Amino acid sequence: MEMLNWLNANFYRKKPDKTIARRAIRHLKKLEKTQLFSPELSQMRAAEGRWYESLIYEMLLELTETTGKVKYVVRKGADAPFPPIEIKLGQNGIFYSNRGDINIRGNGQDIAEFDIVFVDYMDRICFCEIVTSASDLKDMEAEVHYKKKLLSYLYAQAVVPFVLFSSVDISRSSIMKRLMRETESTLIVTPTCEELKNVLHRVSIRGVPRKPVDNSRLIGIEK
Image 1 (cartoon, rainbow, N blue to C red):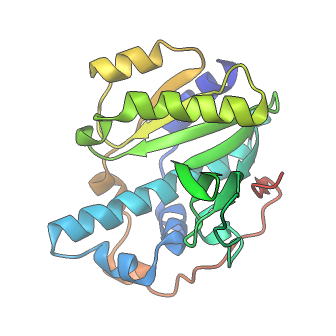
Image 2: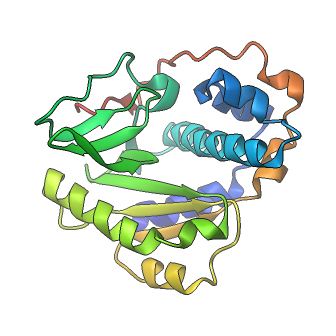
């Protein structure tokens, strides 16, 4: 739990500024960028969810530069190679989707998607899930157990550390209480999407190309 405790403490202290909030926009598609400030609530919430996931990825990547607790973050979004390997019958393992999401395939079918994957100081594969609404918890418990088993099998790991990031306080949920009692699991509650987005304005989305960054702490899925 040493690494997870460190992450928890440092994420609570870290307040994203305009620079990192804007950097997260590079992972969004062109339409999603415009919808981030859409008057249509459903469109805005969907775009906010993608942006929030990208923001957590950028914050985690920035934090790795200050510690040895997290060795690497697996590339995703704009940092993933493009075009990805095409889906083919018989494929097994971990692959990228067209938009840079991290998927596990079984016989050419996507059977699991991971919001964020990273490697800790013990060289263990760890994963994060991102939620922006309490309604996202409906199938969370079964989904987390399934993904832990998949990674445990693929990487021969007895324990797969897990982090759940949420922009709403779900700590009192019975599902969360059960999940957090499990070995190497933690919940990190951040400010809401609305609060985090306050550092941005509609003009902030301009001039942010979907380009990968060069960072020694980023690795590809093949590693």
